[in-house]
Image 1 (tube, rainbow, N blue to C red):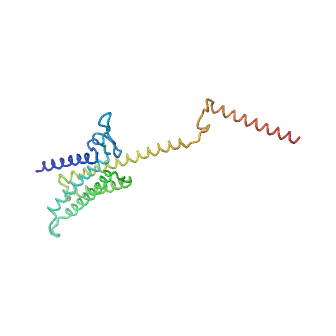
Image 2 (image 1 turned 180 degrees about the vertical axis):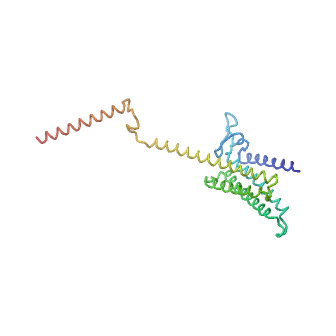
Image 3 (image 1 turned 180 degrees about the horizontal axis):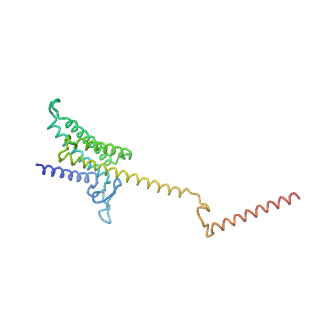
Length: 246
């Protein structure tokens, strides 16, 4: 029962990935074979034709993995609560039950946040960078406390099991999402710097200080000729004034 339940869960994930590829043209398998942090990148089927299949970003794959992991945390903690904590208040084992509720809350909040991000990416809705970063930071902090309380001595995840392993897996996936957010930030800075340099190159006024040669003449020679012409002009003006006074 245990092994076939997990086999069914993995099969469901593979079927969902095939459905997303068929409906939205987004290949999750291509993203696993290739390190790509752009939102969606088109891939070639051969040298002559362009495929409609797109490779999602690494962050998109991490968000999907975090949602699956959070669902397992939520479901496992709910099962533990229904088996051991649905009793009279005065005989509820504490702090076991309160920590189980915290694990359920963490898994639920993480699942909802991941679902919002995934749907926005599938519908090509631009998610602000700070929103994605804040959600990642909030989930990261939640899973820190969830690991401390749920996998502690009196927590529901203290025995080695689904809740223990997937609490740690979710925590590590948050690291991966944070890494992708940092790479997106660095990439945006590089793009902004490149665009700034190109714009400055288009709007810069040519000068002798910027360009050393003007039609094959070195800038020092041009400067000397200019000074000589300026000196001759000043001499001619002084001679004209003296002639005028006389």
